[in-house]
Length: 143
Length: 143
DNA sequence: CTGTTAATGAAAACATTTTTCATTAAGGGG
DNA sequence: CCCCTTAATGAAAAATGTTTTCATTAACAG
Ligand SMILES: [Mn+2]
Ligand SMILES: [Mn+2]
Ligand SMILES: [Zn+2]
Ligand SMILES: [Zn+2]
Image 1 (spheres, rainbow over the protein chains, first blue to last red):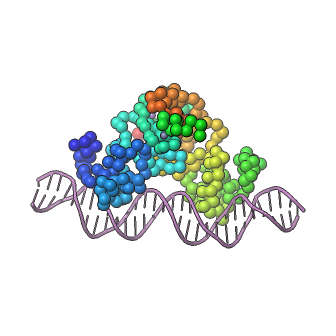
Image 2: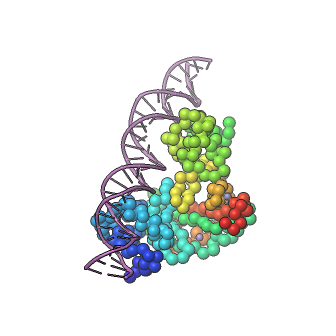
């Protein structure tokens, strides 16, 4: 039994074919997937999979922090698997490939400065980096 | 003629009542507004304002960097006015109030580390902080 | 195996965003 | 100051994305 299946069991959730199909799609993805894309890929594993179940499964996976929502300039419909711990996402703007990097207390100095200036108490942050992956840098050195 | 009106003129765009209404709504807002909210408030200035025009105007304002899109956990439908220069948004999770803070090269060390580790070339970032504003901290000290 | 009930999925409702196209009005030229 | 051109607008409809409803299915404890 895999780690995510144990996690489902631990919170009294059932391990179902639709959930396996969604997880399978995410495991094989190299970039964030939208719900519709997860449906398309998931149906290769479980033909009867429905879009509603994809949404519900993503909601569950989000709650268990198995997946993370990825924000793009135009929308936030991308989902990627989460590594355990504090991470952030780095996206290639050309091919969409996403990698995670660990987020330490790199922002602590900044956050404390902002807290002092604004009076706000900061308890959460959203950080995503955008750029070009190695392959896409070579592909279009000047384009 | 205000600064944003000059900017419209400079790019051969017309200064219209609908655009004034949208800008007016954003100027008076203290938190990010969704298109529908902008419509509601804008109609107090220009009764005939339509939702389609709100979307088109936001698109224009985004292109001119007069407004910025605000991302939240569940969606990205919020728009706030942009100050000139490199800024980030800090949102109160209770009342929604948004403030901007200047973004310097606070992330440069982090970005260079990530570039080294991943091989990506980073050229853009999305950073938003979430927390509680002064008022909301006092209102619910323990709640 | 069987029974309980969480989970599913088709359909419909709902919400958001975009397209279409006839009409309006901004603002430059006369 | 008034036309004229055409960018801009907005009602309606289409397209897209998300949530609700509810009868049916299947996970899994016993
Ligand atoms: Mn972090
Ligand atoms: Mn910055
Ligand atoms: Zn790439
Ligand atoms: Zn507040």
